Length: 127
Image 1 (cartoon, rainbow, N blue to C red):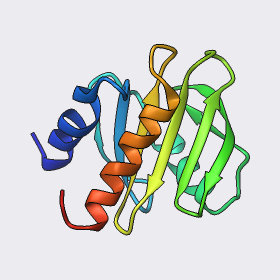
Image 2: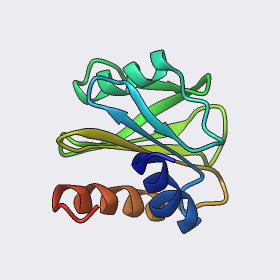
Image 3: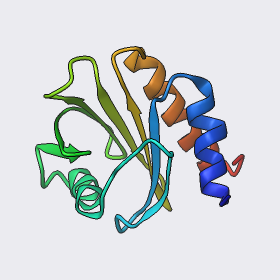
């Protein structure tokens, strides 16, 4: 298991506050996915483009997500148009993009907090 795969399991999935997770390179390359996440390359590239403001929505696992909030320039929150209560949080660090996906069983605020906390830990060298 790669260190990124372990990070996904330990810091995201095991919290119970993130349903699926991924780590992308800044270029959109897929570095790690949780076992239940089916993100493809074109969807990953769309996430990268969203940080530049060049897209108003995301497609993840074939479903459309509407970007609702972009906190600062390094954090995006989008909700799923096809699944009520589902959404995604994407946080760009200096080296990777962290993605946390939540479904209707998870409080979106808790998912956002988990993903942003891991990003902060990475920035501070604590991960």
